[in-house]
Length: 424
Image 1 (cartoon, rainbow, N blue to C red):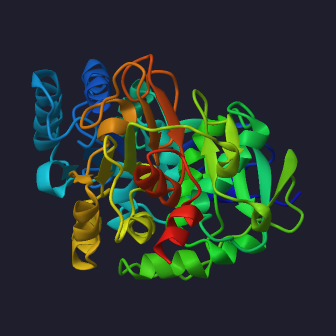
Image 2: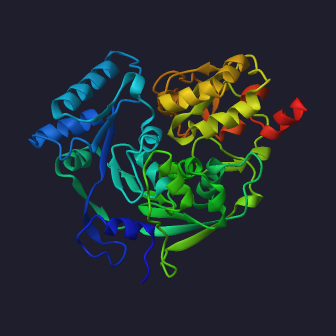
Image 3: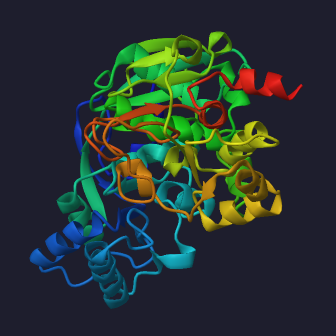
C-alpha cells in the first residue's frame, strides 16, 4: 500500500516499520519548542523528572512571544523563569526582547525548522511547519518536558484526509480563505486526531507563506498536523535561508486516504468566520451590516510580509474609520524591518493604525488589544472562541488581511474590492 506524507516523514524518525495508521510508534524529534506560557509548566515537569540536561542544546527552542514585552509582574516572572532555565541548560536558541518574533513565523524564517523534520511544540499551532513539509504538532507540557530530556516521543500514526485544491486564486483570496472554507466544510472536529494533506494544481499558486497559513489552522479542524509536499516552492523558500534541499517529497500515487475533500479555489471569494467558532464560515458578501470596533492584522497565521503587503494595498491613501482601532503586529523583527524598508509601516501610520512589536498579544487576549464587553473585532488570527480576545461578551470575526484592512477603512466588514473601487 502506498504511503502519504505523514508516514513518509515519520518513517525517517522511527526504527519501527510503519504499515498502517493507528500504530503506536516511538520517534526521534528534530526540534522541541515551548513559549513563555507553556515553557514554565514544561520546565517544572522536567525538574520533577530529575532530568539534568536537555537532550540537545541546539534542538530545544524557547520563544518568549505571548505576553511580551512583559505586560505585568506575573508575565515578567514567567519569562524570568524561562530565561534562567535557558541559561542554566545552555539553550542556544532562546528568544526574548529585540530578537523575539511570533514563534511559528520566527522558526521557519530563521531556518530552524526544515522539510522532513519532526517537530513537537507546547503550542497547538506548531502544525504551521507542515507548510514547508515537516511533521509538526502540539503536545502538552508534560510530554514536551519528556521530549526535552529524551529527544523522542510517541505518536499514534494518524489517518489522513486528502484535500484536493483546484484552480487559480481569485482576487483578494489567499491561503486563509482556503483553510476557512475547509473548516466550514468539515467542522472544528472534522479531522480530529487526523492529518490534513494538501495537494492539487492550486499548489503552484501558493507560496510558502500561504501554505504555512493553511497548515497553521489545521488544528482548528481538530487535525494533528497539516502537510504540504516538499516541491520547488519549498526548496526556494529554504534556499533563501541558505539551506539547500535537494530531495522532494510527494505522496505515493496509490497512497490510501480516509477520505478526499475537494475545493474549487477558483470559485472562492474571501471567507469570514463568524463568532464563536472557526467553522461558522460565510463568504464576505454574505456578512452584512457588521460594524467593528477593532481590527487586528498579525499573528502566526497572517503576520508575514505577504500579509502586510496585502493590508498596505488597501490602506494606502485611505484612513481608518474614526472610532475604529487598527492594530498591526509584524510577526518577526525581520518582517518589521522589511515592512519598514518597503514603506509599509509609513502607510499603516498614515492610515491611522497602531503598529506594535512582534508579539502574539491580542490573538489570545494577552495584551495590546483586549476587547471590552459588547465590542466587535475582525482579526487575521486563528481563533474566535468566546472570550478569546478579551471579554466573554465580545465578538471576534476571522478573515484574511485584505478583508481586515478594508473593514478598518469602512468601519464594518466589507469586501476589499469595494474599498479598491473607491480609489479609482
